[in-house]
Every structure is written in C-alpha cells, then in structure tokens.
Length: 182
Image 1 (cartoon, helix red, strand yellow):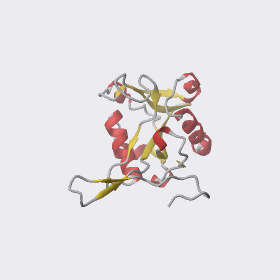
Image 2 (cartoon, one colour; image 1 turned 180 degrees about the vertical axis):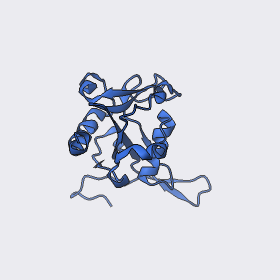
Image 3 (cartoon, one colour; image 1 turned 90 degrees about the vertical axis):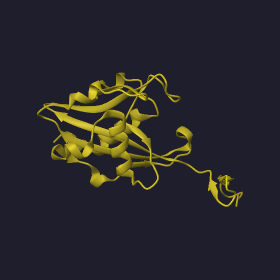
Image 4 (cartoon, helix red, strand yellow; image 1 turned 180 degrees about the horizontal axis):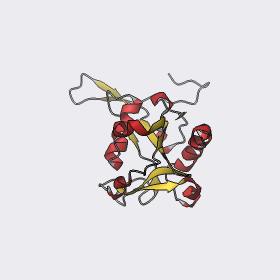
C-alpha cells in the first residue's frame, strides 16, 4: 500500500498468459566484478570495452558485470558473468587467490538512482599473478564485449567508464588496500 510516509510506489502486477499466475514488476539484481591482478610491483584491474551494439554505454569501459539468474547466488552469478564476458574462469585461478572477501560482496548499492534502479552486488577478488597475468583473455570478444584489458591502477583515471564503475574500483582499492599493498 502506498503511504504518504514512504516514497515508494507499489510494484505492478502482470498476469501471465495462462491468467492463473502473476509476476511482479520489481528491481533487478546485478553483479560487478573488480578483479585485481598483482604482478611484480604493479596492481592491475581487469576491465572490458562494451561493444558498439550494446544498448547501454556502447564503446565505454566497465567491469565484468551482469544480472543474476534464477537459482543463482551472487557469487555464482559473478563467476558466470565473468566467464561469459571475458573467458576468465574464476575457479581455474583458485591457486593464485589472495582475497575474495569470503565470496561475499564488499559493497551493496541499493540506491534507486542507479542504472534502471538495479540493486548491485559489488565483489572484489585479488590474485597473485607474479608469474604473469593471464593475458589470453585479452583476445576474447563476443557480441557484448569488444575487448578485455588488464590496466594498471595508476592509469584508471584516463579510462571513460560506464555505470559509475570508476567509483566502484576506488571503493575496492580503499577496502582492500592492505591486501593490495602487502
């Protein structure tokens, strides 16, 4: 019920074709992946360039990201989205893992001012790639992604990011500074 005390609006009900069931218009849940690769004396972040065919922010850079599917938890959605968009399979690199915040988001954004009012679960994963970054992912493309790059964190300010992902990366750097600088 709408109330003068709260600013919400009631979710709309939509009848399914059979007329017996309803679905409710509600906010979607998305996941973002801040993947750090520590290499020598540098800290890298995996980013991707959105293809020009994308409806939202074509040609801009972003973190690997996407929507949760039915029956997925947040980390499963993250693992799937990262793989679909970059070919980087998180379980394959478990031996290089330094930090993953126990597979929980380090920051959850519920502000309705975000893209399409998405609720966003932001994850950060830190890997020790001192023997070399997995560069093979940089040749991966698909209909959503034009390219993937490992970018040193000191060069991030030069990147034109979509979806406020620059601030998500900044939050991750601040949250995991002790791990990144160890």
